[in-house]
Length: 146
Image (cartoon, rainbow, N blue to C red; front, side, top):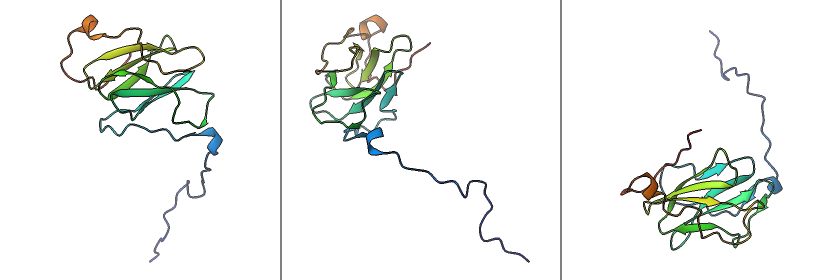
């Protein structure tokens, strides 16, 4: 009668290595909103993350080339009166992003070519609700159809 103490696995000698801090994003205040969302969206140019904000919802858009510690005063995209619940980049234009909020609104934003240098408060399309239909519930999820 043989007793096997350690289960045989082909992964038992595989070890990971931590990424260096200059290759990570640090000090970003990710939103504490308890909604089933990704809290981020990525395309070939930018990464966007929903962040905590007082007085409404906002999100941060960073060029992929920027990494390391992100200053608390880094410009955000802000224009919703309620917390932002989801964001999604346009699959056809890397500088266009949509945001949906608890304030029952969807806004379309255009990110400048080099990224944000000042807070972005004016969307390209402010009230997409009128183009779709009147939204009476919070916008929980955005999805782009290719």
